[in-house]
Image 1 (spheres, helix red, strand yellow):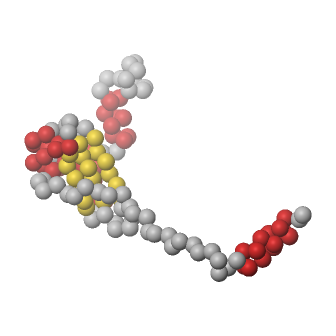
Image 2 (image 1 turned 90 degrees about the vertical axis):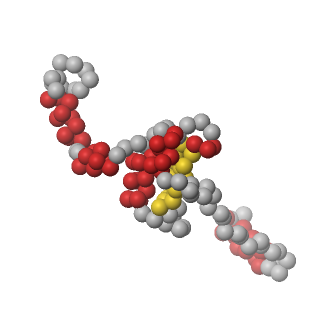
Image 3 (image 1 turned 60 degrees about the vertical axis):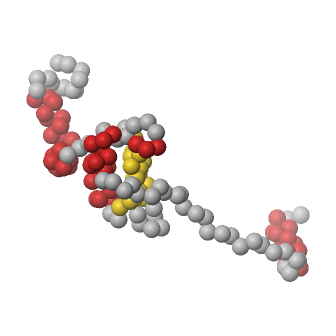
Length: 133
């Protein structure tokens, strides 16, 4: 039997049974659940538990929110959760969670990778940093 003929027959069979089958309506899939934001600031959390050793960052496309969970030690009580409206605010929060001060962050933001390479080669070596002269 030719492929087109079998498709046409299948279509006819499905059309004849049109009233007999019901298709369940698809439900909207739920997005990932995010923990409620912590009640204390990230600065206070870093002062108490130290810089984060693990950071989870999620951008929820539906709501446009940026969710951050930072982990600062062992156990659930050492985690800090936050949500932000912009990626700039989320990135600033991540820097704070890592224990970076604003002046350090600005300095790194303004430094290009070429400057880092020039500093390493100017400090005594020629060629590839770390391999010696």
